[in-house]
Image (cartoon, rainbow, N blue to C red; front, top):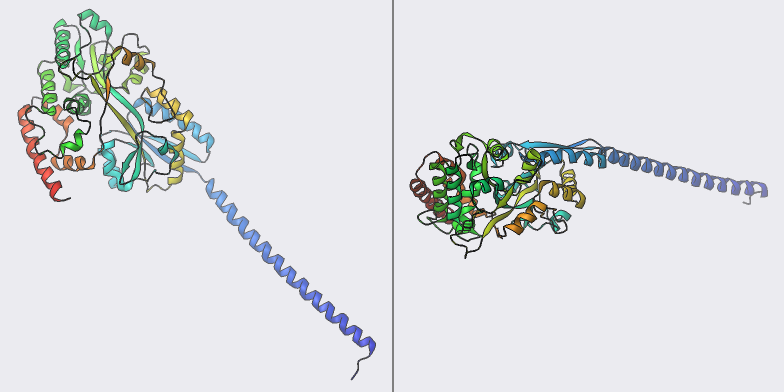
Amino acid sequence: MRLRKGMGSALVVSLIFIGLLAGYIGYIHSEMNNQIHSMSFSHTQMKQDFNYKQPVKIKLGIWEAKMDIQFWTEKVKEYSIIKPNVTVEVETIPDNSGQYLKVRLAANDLPDLFYLKSGHLFIYKASLLSLNELNAASRNRYPAVLDDQILGLPLVSFSEYVYYHPSIFQEVGIDVPQTFSEFMLVLEKIKKHGKYIPIAIGGKDEWTFYPFIEFGPPILTEDEKYLSNLTTIEEPFGKGSGFEKAANMLKTIAEQKLAGPDALGINFDQATQLFQSNQAAMIALGQWYYSDHMSKVNSDEDIDAFVLPWRATTKERLQAVTIPDQYMAINKNSKNTEEAVAFLEWMFSHNVYQAYINNSQNSSTLTDVDAALPFFNKVNSSHPFEPFMYQGLDEKFIKVKNIAHYDEKKMAQEIFAGADVSEIVKNMNENWSRAVQYVHNNQ
């Protein structure tokens, strides 16, 4: 059957219209899907941007190093300008012995970033973030590596000195001592003069004994790996040992009142006040002390320094313990590890770190930053010495030390209180021997 010509044309037009309508409907559907997808993506992006700008607070835990607390408390204000959504709270850690942080560790409440001593890194290593990929780590001379992971970056390195007042030395008629026996003789002459305390020690704070009892034995044994080698000896503290010599030195200072009439009755701050007011002729502390002295006295006209001469004769090398310290670590359980990492990188950035290291007057730990140290350049030129790079990072030593309850600074405090040195080393050798055997049998 044949369709009329008009009807055939109408049918063709209808089919074309239906096709166009279907295509238009498909296009509209596709556009709607695209818009919905675009809206969804924009919402996600807006949510991400919103979250990124959410306020973030991170805590920076610092020991009671007053110059550091003052510096970083002011400096973090600059960081808030760079990252307005990030607030950095400088938190004071009341001791650098690790006891306070151990409580925080047990409570899973460590700061986001914090200072650690090298010997404490092992205690916290399970809670520390690896810093291997950080730019700051690649530029640091002394990164703390445990199990192939960088877990701490020291902010400073420093040498140990005996600070003294040249005016007092001139008045008493004494010179800078070159040997151990000369040093003890200088102490005696100052006491005999009757006007000054020979050397200020804040014995109420046991850590102040560290220049003598912690750093003396390694130099006396001429062993930069002193700590790790102690774990290979079952009785390392007996007759003739570096520890016994350092302990007997402290015993003499205590019995002859060479640190004043009541060294155990004053703390660190009081000891520094005695030195800063010229009531004490000397004080033994690290390079870090200079900034604190200047903040109180505002002048270094009557202050100089020499290294404590542990050597027996001038034919031997004159050495001073030099160590990296104030290891920056990041709590890997922090809710804001990315921000903590970003802040740590900022701390070690060239301009920020340069300002910090100049302010602290310690030596730089970065390969591309040198500290400006006019006072110590003068000291080291007048009284040259060789750095004794003390290796304070040894896990086996920490294990043995903890089992043996070895606390050299506590023992120094006991010696000042009248304890017998021979009895102390006898008991310590017994405890150490058992601890060495236990660790050896349980490796």
